[in-house]
Image (cartoon, one colour):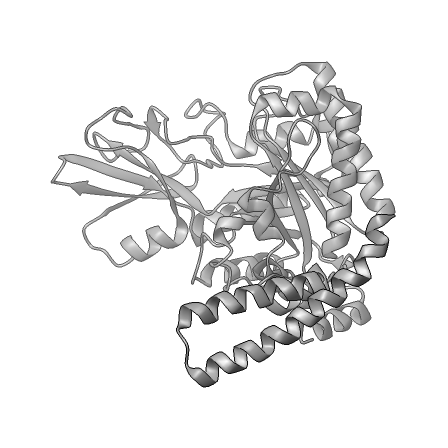
Length: 445
């Protein structure tokens, strides 16, 4: 009660002090006093304004760089014969100017991490970038082009994933926070990307499926027409993980198959990261075609999105041949590294000092080059218009729901991969023209 009586007096004193300070500042300017005294007075003036006006007006006056978030109009009604789904990692936020929004049907922002208690990790750059003016601008451009925007919830460690699955309360909390954030941002849904390594057993598969189902139902209820998809390993049927493909196919709006990383940086042999074939004849431990066939035993094809890589691994090899033995990770010559489509194209496209080849099992080409300074070959399999065209034709032949990209921005400054997508799938059609026009107007506000 005492504070209620003291507040008017404090404001009166503050306003009197503010008036006196203004005259003092004027006198200092006239007398051209030392700049340090002036700086001190200005600091006191700012504090006085905060006390007098309250925090929100002060923030508007003195912190203009703080993003003022305006909810976007959800754009949930798009029609296209095939999905073109692209992940936009926060670290590529400045590399997305070449996105063709007349082709892209869904932009999945990647991502906001979740913890075992069902909280969004807000002190992470993924969350902070998601709330930034850069992301707002990107989302508005997507909506203006008739492209759905979804938020990716991500966790790559087993411990937090199991803790989340063990707690109904944590799951409810996560669903509440995630759906609330989607509504606040005015976007169109969620992608769940919880990547559990190993087989946690049937009980956890059931819990995960139930969580996805509850999230989907809540998301649909809060934002009609919204979409919830799940990212899963391509080997999820061959080597069971936390994903029950049949259940997820029922309770979600779609499954994004991460059809890459069949080979990784630590692989003993240089093979494509996304081979289309090769498993049936024993060349490779698994491949995309076999994985898709395995998935389609448990789910409808129209709900399956085939994800392809816009990157490859640059290996150190003893000789430039398919399945060449790779040098060990402890080699003094260096290590294997991931490289983007743009990096490889810019570095090697016009070079005559490379060896080019084609893997007829994987249906993808490779580039190899000798490094005399360290006396070794380097070799990289990289998707291009030829190999991706074959994969897109395969997706169409299998009547899949569409294709996906990991990751937008890896083709920074290039147009040929968008041209290929348009040739294979065409431009999308927006069902609700009035909604699209409203969104176009929003972007110019």
